[in-house]
Image: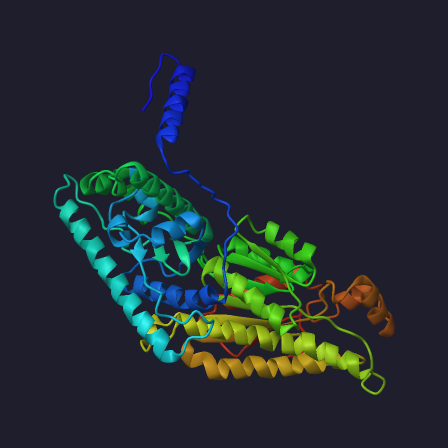
Length: 498
């Protein structure tokens, strides 16, 4: 602490003291909180298993039911992870007492060295790793509960125990992982983790890292004003959920992203148009992720899902929305155009679904208790064309009819895994797919005005992108619904499911 007769004198003295300390240190401090994170297929494969274990363990302990990761790995983090005294150093405590509110007093160390560094683990390998990780996590929780009881017994005013879930996890191959109820919290935990690493290494380079004692740490973690907040805040419904939206740059996709962001979800905006993907992500806050991807390219899709997992740790909801329609009769259609439509309007959904299911299965790997399953959701933007095809839209309608079958097949096979799969059937939504030129042509072919065409339903009302987005959100919150098609078309008798 520095003091002075004026604020400037006090500040100048602080700068002088810091400069003296920095000169004295033999180790150069490198606190880069915006680094380029080195992630790979190994971390992308392993993180969903860890996220699933953490979520299920939290549920057993009546804690938050979703967790988001933030991965860091730089030279300093590798330095501490390679320390011969690592197990002792991580038990010392926090760099500054108030950090305990965000990170707990110590991190959890998990060994991933026995796993193959290839991106595929066999069942025995991952089963053994999860067993060891679960044992380490359980030990951490028991230690935290003992720490609480010891210090609560000494407290003048009894406290309510906070959740025992670690906020920083160290893994030699992956690095430092910040844990939070949302991306903002996990980034803060990771920032503090990096500051802790720098403080510890710098202190050890000139002497010994000796932070405040356990009682003082407890007093800060269980500060009365922090305790008063418990139970008072109501979180948004989808807080902690990672939601991936394909075709997110379009009129419908961008509106879906907004609805889910407003409900607390972390948004991943995927689109073939890089600028459109960025624009949607930007509208959903600084923690959203934009990815430019050709969904018909399996390799690009693989890389996209790697980036998603390495950014958030896993996935909860896929909204497979991307699509495009090309006109032409079956008799006169070019075969390449038909294949192009099938690739985008069916196979791209299939590829994205498979990648999503792999992540869902990893998050619930070997879990047998039904109530502890995390599950997940896949929501398709299908189309009324699947049930009520229009002339010269065969390549689109046939692909969408097959998409209905894909949706039903996934719901049939994955219901036992608590994975829900549903679809939205919308009609006549002004978007990139149904642009103003196409609207004019379709209206003219029916001898209707544009307004008459757009309001050609039982409710005589134009259906908007916002209506479709809200329907997706409602469907996401319908926990006992799977294998269903929700129509958003103002009422179209020919397209009614039943």
